[in-house]
Length: 193
Image 1 (cartoon, rainbow, N blue to C red):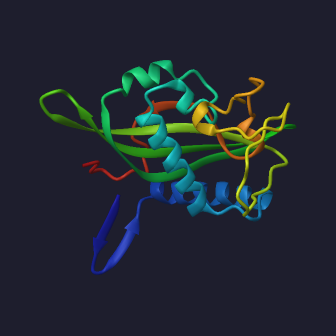
Image 2 (image 1 turned 90 degrees about the horizontal axis):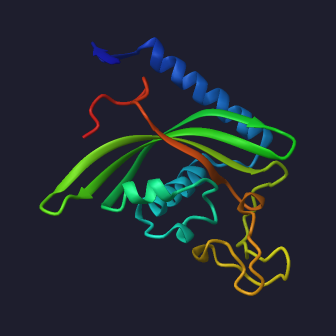
């Protein structure tokens, strides 16, 4: 809770803990990736999340989503509007090959119910992964086939149209490797709509 009295704002200990966790995770990411930019990361996630909700076919997201999306696509076929809101950094870790970021994003959806639009508020808990050695590049990236060097379109699922090889998106950027809906986190605003 945030309480206002006499012009002072007090933040509850749970909000303070969330802020400290966010700062600690951000510091760990920034230490590993000095060029990490939170605004650019959040904007990239916004695009990926909206693409996931608006996708009609798996190939539209299969370049950067590395888990089975069939159930997600069928559950969200009637989404006509998607607004991505708050972001909370939950964890950052690395292994011998990859770096991982766990985040929570609040999304507001509008579903077409045939006779009316139904608003819905959800919290997405996501794990993103990219190659451990990848460093942020400021140049435009042309995705190339790892086998024949032809250019590859992400809209076609990251699959080479000539030889059929699949691009490993984690070599270039953050790929979504896990996602689930969850309850409202303790740090979230009380009024979702």
